Length: 184
Image 1 (tube, rainbow, N blue to C red):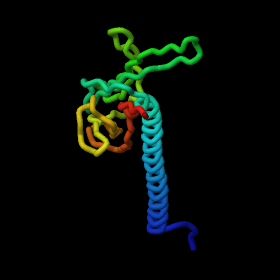
Image 2: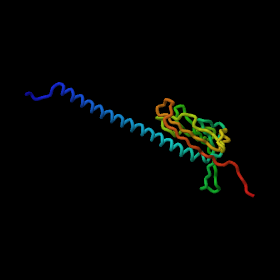
Image 3: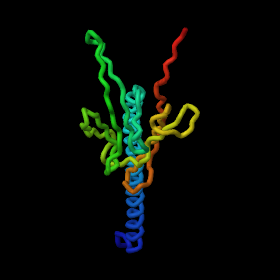
């Protein structure tokens, strides 16, 4: 009797081995794709949270929203008070948030008649889809930017840059009351 494997036994052994290798590769590929998907969502959330914190902090100080603001542009002014000087000094600052041609949300500060700085608030590996700014009164009616009491921000991120929204964060910023009331 000869010792060894027949051709049929070899083919069955190789086939089973190939099936096992294919299953392992498929499992690893699926795991990698899942990791990339979750990692991208975390990147969107982190970016959206940082943008939201910055916008809320600055827009809550707004005393004037410029009438040229629109869905892709938010221009506002606020007064910065320096209490460390005597007498107290104040400076009017004008800030502009806008979406550039590459879909990156940016921030500029007006100095004199010039807009300076071009600071990106979102990363360049995805784009923001406009419009992102919506202006409402306290009853929830859409109004012009100058009459707004609430600025709603809808951040829509497109990771593949194919104009399909991959992540959305919506939040509202309640502006300071502009009317002054005097008690008798």
